[in-house]
Amino acid sequence: MAAFKSFLDNVVRRKTPTNDGSTGPVKGKPVFYGTVPPYPNFNASNDAAVLKSAIESKGVDEDVINAVLVKRNNEQRQKIKAVYEANAGKKLEVALKKALKSDHEDICLALLMPPAYYDAFLFRKATKGVGTKEDVLVEILATRTNQEICEIKKVFKEEYKEELEDVIKNETSGDFNKALLAMLQANKDESNVVDMAQAKKDAEALFEAGENTKGTNVSTFIDILTTRSGPQLAQTFQQYTSVSDNTFPKALEKEMKHDIKHCLMDIVKCAWNTPAFFAEKLHLAIKVWTTVSLLLFLMICQRV
Image (cartoon, rainbow, N blue to C red; front, side, top):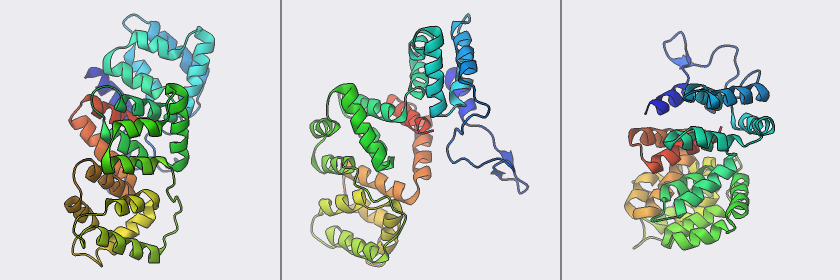
């Protein structure tokens, strides 16, 4: 766990306290909404040399490796990789794989992947072997843009010689399968414009498909939740309380079961507040550190 403490100490930097005792951005500095802003005065050659020295030092200087990798954003890490390979004659990933081990190795190698490649890797890891890591599949698809999902599908085909849709069809089933395939279509409205009339119409349709009918028309839930924008869905959830005595999340909890319930609930959480959704995942990943939790944690780190 010592390696993780060092890693987290570098990732979670302290903010400057404000006059009221709260924390906030330092005055005069730009506000970044990701954990890792671009490193100022970045020099890929210097970073590559520092990493080479840390890797080749006696005992391997893990603190230096952590400090460099987590304080550069993904674009900067890609430049470091290119310079390292040009100067050292071998890939940085190969050098780190030889120098590090266990979860620390996994974290550092993950940080060196471009986001689409890491997401494709996660899909592969989540669908191979015994069981399918449903949470990983849902988190990726619920939080990526249409363009990012298309890029993930392209990379997955290039890297693993299979269509991602075919893998999902083979590894999942039922309504959960339908929801994942719907998200893979990358057909979500990404406009910030909210149509109040549509929100009211969708709220009524969801009520009729669930609480106000015998059984549940899951297809209606999947269609609306996987194609509307976050702001549009947020307004739909507000409108839902005008046609039902329940909030939409509470109704969803009552109407759905198993994988499809968790899938649609995650979409709802992302529509309300995606950063809060990631914060919850990060909290759970750290609280119960398992292989799946590690994947979820790395996924969050990789988006910056």
